[in-house]
Image 1: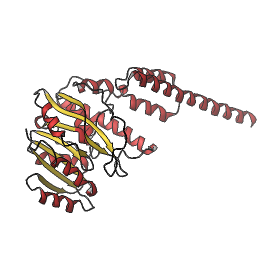
Image 2: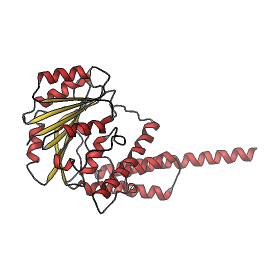
Image 3: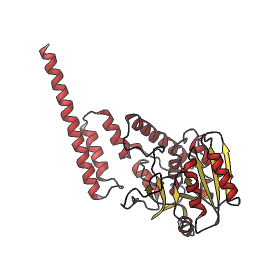
Image 4: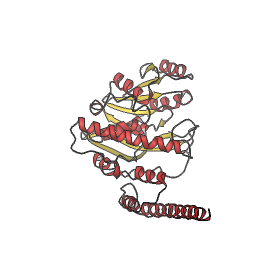
Length: 326
């Protein structure tokens, strides 16, 4: 099996060498690397051309005006020729045995996609924690999970994704405007309804945490939360359109999405007993939580609600007292 490795790059010149060299060092060598530079303004072109000169039989370089991640994926897929398409972010790296592990899973004809674990590393490639990477409670029927959880995100990111070309031909080209960022979500949610996706609990790469990527900040602003919620709604609309196009019998209902529903409730800052009970039921039935996490998050949710209740009643009482005094 031949792999096509699609690397979308935008201003990550400082990490490109590590990313590409981690592919070159693979124990499984039947692959091509397609680097799509998405209008970088740093010295990415120079770095890419030097690497292409160093490995002329392995690297295909494409330079285009900035279109976002979705547009870069479209370009890379169109230029690819492999039976298996694997994605690697330009700031991430792979373990030397990544492709060998993946190709063994793809020997099973019913498997159309493979995901795996990533460990977090810093800007210098050093491991950030000694804890084991998060394991995903996913079976091979991702479609069922997506429907049950309302498109809730609990999946590994771009650099852990690989799919059969034949499956991605039913997904590409993707909308470059709606998927300017987070295009890995488009791939995961769409392919879930096209066949069996295997998640292997092996660490086969490093996800780099640094100041320039979308997940680096420990503090999340209200603006980022609002943007994320809009992103969930857009994703849901896109997925349901896709399901309609492939004549899938079911649609995704966002009311089942615990992450979205809980955050929307918090933003309202209003005590609503019916919604509290509904969200509590979602927490207790949430397939992505272990039993002890369900207890923890349920207690945390109720603690926040009690805070909302007493704060609102205090403000109401204070307002009435002021009006009476006037």
